[in-house]
Amino acid sequence: MSSTVYAIDPDAAGAIGARRDLVRESARRSLVRRRLLGRAAIVLCVVAVAVSLAPLVALVTYTTSRGIHALSWTFLTHIPTPPGIPGGGVSNAIVGTVIIVGVAVAMAVPVGIMAALFLVERTGRIASALRFAADVLTGVPSIAVGAFAVAVFVDPFDHYSGLVGSFALATLMLPIVIRANEAAMRSVPRDLWEAGLALGVRRSRVVRSVVLRGALPGLVTGNLLAVSRAVGETAPLLFTIFGSGFLVANPTQPMQALPLTIFTDGTSAQPSSQLIAWGSAFVLLVLVLVLSVVARVVSARLNRQAR
Amino acid sequence: MAPTLLEEVPPPRLTPVGGVKEALQRRSARPGGRAYTVVRWSGAVLFAAIVVALVVSLLASSSQAFAHSGLSFFWSGTYNAAKDIYPTGVFILGTLITTAVAIILAVPIGVGTAAFLSEFAPRWLATPLSVAIDLIAAVPSIVVGLWGLLVLQPIFTRHVEPFMKKIPVLEWFFHGPALGPSMFLAGTVLAVMILPTIVALSRTSMSAVAVEDREAARALGATRWQVVTTAVVPGARTGIEAAVTLGIGRAMGETIAVAMVIGNNYALPHSLLSPGATLGSAIINNFGEASPGLDRASVIGLVVVLLVLSALVNVGGQLLMRARSRVVGATT
Image (cartoon, each protein chain N blue to C red):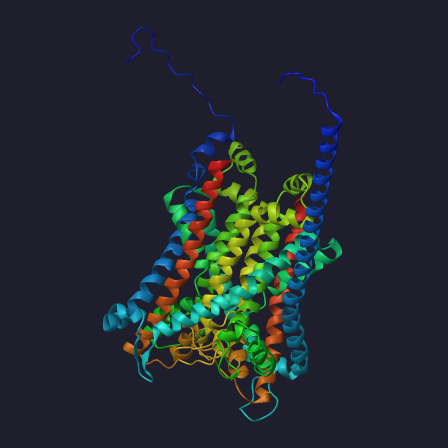
C-alpha cells in the first residue's frame, strides 16, 4: 500500500461524480426491483396460505356441521339398524375402536420403551441397523402392515378378530413410538445419567428415576401422537377385524371400528348411510383432535413442572 | 516383567464400611443389573422379529404369484380370478401419476404457507394458524377420503374439471369427459391429505434457522424475501426435503382415500380426468374377495410391489439426507 497522492483534475472529478450517480441510480433501481419482487413473492405466499387453508378449513367445518347433524344420544349408544330401517347408532364401532386401540397401545408402548432404551444405551451396528429399520418401517404403507397381520394370524386360523387388528395397529405404531421415545430419552442430559451412576446407583434404577422421569413429557407426547395416528387407520383393520353389527367387547371376536363404518357407509349411495358416515367421521375427528390436544397440553404442563 | 527389584508389597486391606459390603454382595449390584439387560434386549429382539416377520411373511405369501408370472409381474401383471389379470404396470403408473399430482399441488402451496407463517405473519396470526395446521395434520385419511368423495367430487365434476380443460397447455392433460372419479381428483385428495404435514414440518425447520443467519443476510442488503431465499430456505433445506419425502411416501402408500375417489378403472389411463387405479386402491378392492391360492398371492404380490416402491423412496430420501449432511459436515 503506497501512499500516493492523486491530484484530481476537474474533468475527472466530474466523471467520478457521474459514475457515482450511475451507481446510486442502479442500486436504487435494483432495490426497487428487489422490493417489488419481494412484495410479489409475499403476496404469492399469502395466496398459498389462503389456498391451503381453504380445503383444510372446509374439510373440518363440513365434517363438523354434517356430523353434528347426525349426532344424537341414540347415535352414540345404539348399534346399527338393518339397512333401510332408520335410526340406530355406531356404539359398536366406538367400543370397537376404543378396545382395539387400547390393546394395541398395551402391546406397542412397553415394547417401544424397551427398544428405545436399547437404542439409547447401545452404540454400534445392531443399534444403527434397528434405528434404520424403524425409520424405514415408519414410512411403510399401512396396508402392508394389514396384509402382514392377515398372513400371520388370519389365514392360518381362518379367524378374524379385534386382536389381530390390534396387532396390526401395534406394528404400525411401534417404529413411531420407538423413535419418539428414543428422542425423548436423549433429551435427558447425559450429565444426569453420569451423576446417577457416579452415586453408585444401579443402572436400572438410574433409568427408572432419572431417565424415564426426565423424559416423561416427551414420552407422553410421542406415544399419544402415535395413538392418535393409529385411531384413524383404516387399511390395517379392513381385512383383520372383519366388522360386526353387534356390540362386541371381546377382542378375540370380529369387531367393528369407526374407520370401517365410515368406509362402508360413506361409499354407499344411501343418504341415510352417508349421514352415519359423517357422524362417525365427526366422532373420529373429535377423538383424534382430543388426543393431539391432550398430548400437547400434558407435555407443556410436565415441561413447566420439570423446570 | 515381574517386579524383581521391588519388594513384594502386600496390597492394603480395604474394609468396606457398613452396608457397602452387603450391597456389593447383592447380585443386583452388578453394573447393569441383569433384569435391565434382559428388558432392553427383549425390546430390541421383539422389534427386530416383527420387522423380519413382516418381510418374510409378505414374501412367502406372495411367492406363488411371482413363481407363476416371474419378473413380468412388475409390468404386465398376473392372474386375477375376476378380471383374468392384474395390470401391475397400470397400477404403478397410477400410483406415480396421483403422487406426482399431489406433490405438484401440495409442495409449492405448503412451503409457501410455511414461509409465510415462519417469516412474514405477525405472531398473533402465525401462532394460532400453526397450531391449527399441526392439529389438522392429525385428521385421519379416511375422513379426507369421505370429504373428497361426497363434497369434492361433485364440485370437481361440475366446475373444476371443465375449467381445467379451458386452460392452455394444461388442457392437454385434461381431455375426455369429466365423469366424477378421476386420477386428478385422487391426486387432489392426496394433496389435501399431505398438505398439513408438509406445512408443519417445513415451518418447524424454517423457524429453527438461526436468527444470526437472517441478520447476516439483512446486513448484506437482502430484502425480507431475499432473506427467505438466501438464508431461511437453504438452512431449512433438510427439513423441507424430509417433509417432501414423507409426503411422497404417504401419498404413494395411501389406500382407502384413493380407492374412494379414483374410480378403480384398470385400463391404461389416457388423461388425468379418466378414472384409474393405484397399487393401494387395487389392493383394497381385491384383498377381501381374493380366494386363497394364486389369487390371494397375486394381491399380496401387489403389496410387495408397493412396499418396494415406498421403501425405495424412503431409503433414497434418507441416503440423500445423509449424503448432504456429510457434505455439509466436510465443508464447515
